[in-house]
Structure formats: structure tokens, C-alpha cells
Amino acid sequence: MNFQTAIRSGFQNYTNFKGRASRAEYWWWALFTVILSILLSSISDSLGNLGSLVTLLPSIAVAIRRMHDVDRVGWFVLVPIYNLILVLRRGDAGENRFGPPPPPKFN
Image (tube, rainbow, N blue to C red; front, side, top):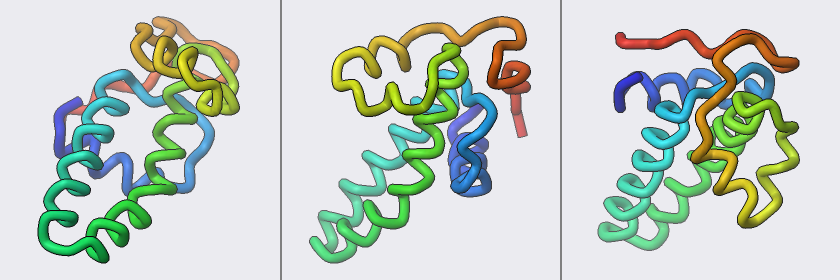
């Protein structure tokens, strides 16, 4: 998955809290939110806040789907250090209780 596909997937699946998200999707999305926040905050604090608000729900959805990829429930997003360990882990290669692995997306 590349940068553009991850951003598109993040916005298209902003209310999808089921399924799985790959490491690449999660980290490209995280990079996008950081860049957007820096750019908009450099223009205006209000724009920075608006950008953060717009990406809040998609960020939560991507994080929950990332937890599903390592076969954990989405609530693990709330556990401070352990969630970082989980997002760094490789996802399950096969199907787990949250469904099949996310297909590789190149477009």
C-alpha cells in the first residue's frame, strides 16, 4: 500500500470499525495526519484544529482496524504503551477472528 492509497482508504473507511488494516495503511495514515497538522497549524491554529477534527474519526477507525489485524479487540487502542507494541507487530498472515488479511492495494 502506498501513501495515496492509504489516505484514500482512511477517508473511505472512516466509519468502518470492522475488518483489518495493514501496518503500511496505519503508518501512512499516521504520517499523513502529522504532515496535515503541521501544514495547517503553520497557516493558522484554527485550521490546525479543524484538520485534527476532520481526521479524528478516520484515525480512530484505522487504529481499531490495525488492532484487529494483530488479533486484538479495538479497545487495546486505549492501553498506552501496549498499543504501540501492537501497531509495530506484523499482522496475522491468515484469517483471524476479525476476517481475512487486508488485500495489498497498489492503486
